[in-house]
Image (cartoon, rainbow, N blue to C red):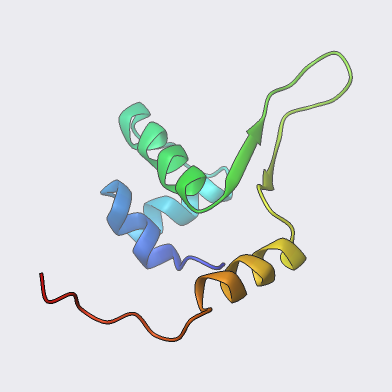
Length: 86
């Protein structure tokens, strides 16, 4: 799944240009916004990997493309969802 920089910037409360500067290492963002950025990315499937003796830190997706396709297919089984009368 792709997330637009505009959407992400809005979710964490910064200008898109500030987010892009942070992405390229040209500027910094407030620690609270940094924490919110991590929360939003984790909600969309990012997994943050800490640095250890065997390798450096990094980020990867929680599910590979094949698994995402399967999840999307499972969610769409049974047809479209309708409002309940309750």
